[in-house]
Image 1 (cartoon, rainbow over the protein chains, first blue to last red):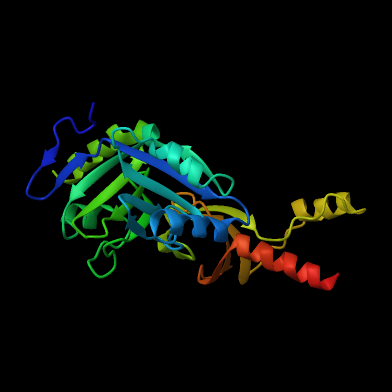
Image 2: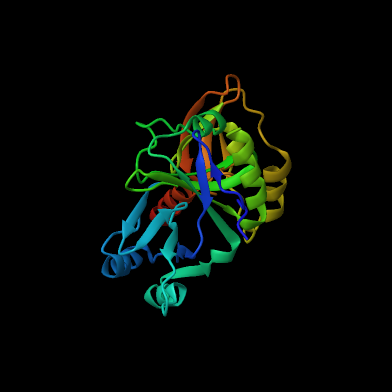
Length: 177
Length: 97
């Protein structure tokens, strides 16, 4: 059940939990970064970002989550096992963990940073500072989150540990009150 | 105090954990390892001025950093990735041999 059973829909904030996704954590093996990039380019047509950026490629969103680490977010499709496909593609070059069940991703639909985000987070969400495709790993109210702005700039996604998703949803409700 | 993480950019102090002096850990296989570890563990210098320290970006990218901080003013003079520092040290050691 959604942690945001009653999705937040206010003028100040519109938030919902994203479902039907496969989320894979990818960490490059030592010394394999260059080969991993070659394989990623062949599979997705893009290089894996080396700085806090999220890139969209062939239906997948590749999110930088630290040096030589990424989250690959893909929409579920009938008959496809995204994790198995990635494990096969990156075999021997990266360590993969299917974190679909351990992460909750909330989407805050906003084309511009809302007052809620500006007021309550320690990073600079100014339009010129946090641009489409930018990523930040930080915390809100002591809860660790990875936040990215969609490359098309239409929304912000927040990924947090599923065990803390209720607390995160509470924070969102209170912050937007 | 704000620290400029080489990976994430400038972030607030509350995202970081402090470990301490970034002095190189002695080689446990060296013949004088016991004395070296005693010095490493107990005879730390109490620097009044710029000091290299290890910090961990715990609430961020989970990278270890070597931060040069002036202990009198808390001014951050330089921040490097500890991984890069270790690789550079290995390279220097390799050239010296």
